[in-house]
Image (cartoon, rainbow, N blue to C red; front, side, top):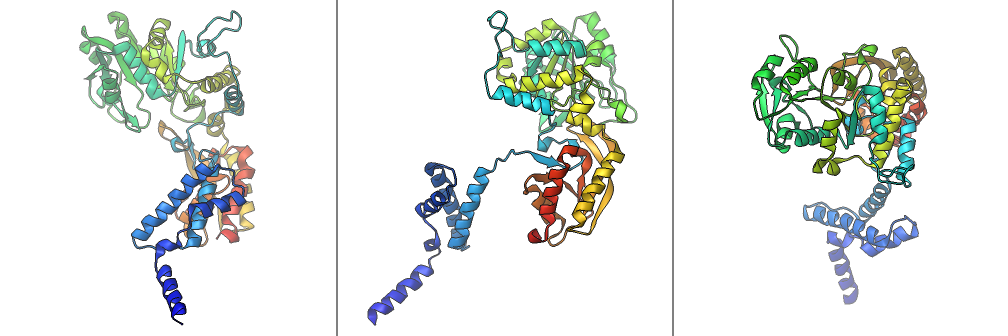
Length: 471
């Protein structure tokens, strides 16, 4: 009797101890091995220790997760580890160049070229003809010369690096003249005054926020002046009583004083955006033709290539920039160069609208987008009746063409249990992941930013997300 009573007391004591509910790492490992999860024991041990540590912290805070709940967390943690975070998603937000979703998708041909060079050796810095060491920019410089007139081109890892490297090489220890209206923050804390400071150049602001003339630059030039810098405002616009010095006007000042002109055009456009009913963005070729000494731009915005920064212009200056010690730290790798070269060839062949995803989306006919939206809505209605085709507005995004919109069409879904927030989250976590937006308590999927070849994948993902089993 006494022994039975003691046993009862012991059981009660253990059950009242929430830490006793914690599974051991070894028991979780045994289960993982049995299920052949595909990760090594040391990795799983570290993963399960994290799960158990989190549970201990919750217990200390007054919570009491069950053993089963913790085991389920361990299983979920394995699944999260196995799932690549950067797996492709479907962008149905209506923002073409979506910074948070990786900006511009490259063409299928560019992606194939990038994958091919990543998987093997390439003659990156050797000339096949002679077997001697050669420059990695030869191919891209040749293409850019034909497309823009640039005597030389250097590609680095992004446009922030391009601006920083250019200023470091051309103006360190000296002054750079910038309009007050162009001493901007472009995004992510990238501020022109801070970049100048980091490059060891001194900022000299001229003019006013809304009006600056070439004469303002000319008056500010002295023996310390290294360059005149013109910056495209990218993600904002000033309207009304305004004036700005053009590159051609600054080039005239430069011709008289010997001061070079640097222009950061931002989006890297190589075609006229006005063709699509949008405001005109400066192109690299136009800037160089107007007299810019060096032009910097992004390769992964309106140019539609992989992430890259472009430095193009007069040979003597680009070579000087290329020889700066910082150039090696920010240079583009072989996969970027391969994808960038293929993208430039699309322009050289006159097939950029047909091949490059950014231009395919921008050039899409609203009527065709509406037809695709109607087809998707019809499929969803079989599961969830409250679905409509909605006229919406798409934007270019990525700091390009602020305030410019494009007519588009999307599918608007009135979510069931849980509402729009639950459905939009379910879409983000599905397979494939789908990113949309919420408008008036409905989940809206804009078809302009979905390539037609992804329509079937989008439909499958949406049907899975709205199915009764998941509601």
